[in-house]
Image (tube, rainbow, N blue to C red; front, side, top):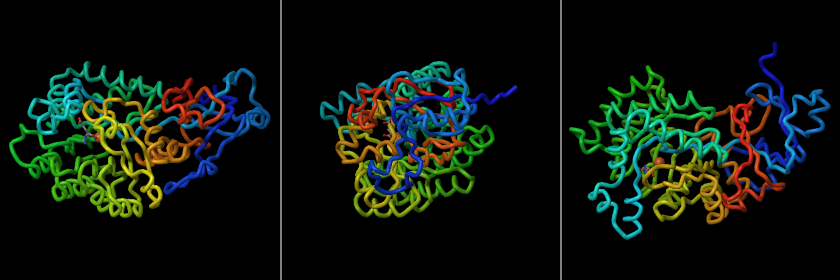
Length: 413
Ligand code: NIG
Ligand code: FE
């Protein structure tokens, strides 16, 4: 019996493969590889071939029964990869949002019980089931919007018990879902006010007491830290990241959100990505662009906080690699609608369709060091989505209002 059944999906009016898109720098729409009247031939979870629908039928002798026929006009592209989320949490911060919009400062909001610490308390108090339920609901919303791989951070535990609870919940839900969750440990989100010690001793505690558990229980292979004077300053963050790197973790940083410093550190410690970058100036942009660190921008945080967008156009023009992620979290980025956010960023920052869509697919996969997805090529995972339109430019033009009509994860619809 052949366990790896072959199936042909199509025809797609247009299929965007993202093959041949350079990892860095600007991309004109003319550089997109667009196959007209295309098909994708699958073998089990993987792509076997991509090409003209009729040619695939002929060359591979595909029988009618093995064809999943798309009868309406659709545009196909790789499933979106959301490379930065905090979707495992409990509680709501609607009050923070209202207070911010009523002109209250960060400090006033924190004093009245808001901010990250508020989400920590709700997450600590939540049962495993409640936490898993919230995460699953957000995953389902994301899948409907075409996201087939999502990074998920801890960081609302801020003690061993709840950081582990969060990462175990992510691990468990990952096994129950068809989509892939990529866990990241963000125990270094802020210094928890109930920790008996300073930032340095908290981070040393994480290295000594949490890292071994992450490794032995395979809870996360990525370490994140919020680098900011109000969270963790450059020097302590550097020692932490060096220690994490030595233990084999991939590194990523919440960098240059309000003040600079994080992006420089990201390049120095060879982080896979530097995320946020709203405060990056020309100096930071040039430094990042020369490195192998992906610049992951988070328009959802700009929209949630009412702040300017990260300088995505300048990052690309300087030669950087740009990924676009949602930052979906209860505080700064509650919307969670990646496609809408990316479309708006494109309009404000003057990004081509190719640059925005590459930032959601092939370059987003790169931001997570995933080489098995993000484009449609033989041998890669059969993660792809279809939008109900005949021209790919309709997708961003509709600014998120046009949703995928079909989503396939590892070959399964
Ligand atoms: O990426 N900047 C730090 N962390 C999150 C916000 C988390 C929160 O407010 O709960 C972010 O924006
Ligand atoms: Fe974040």
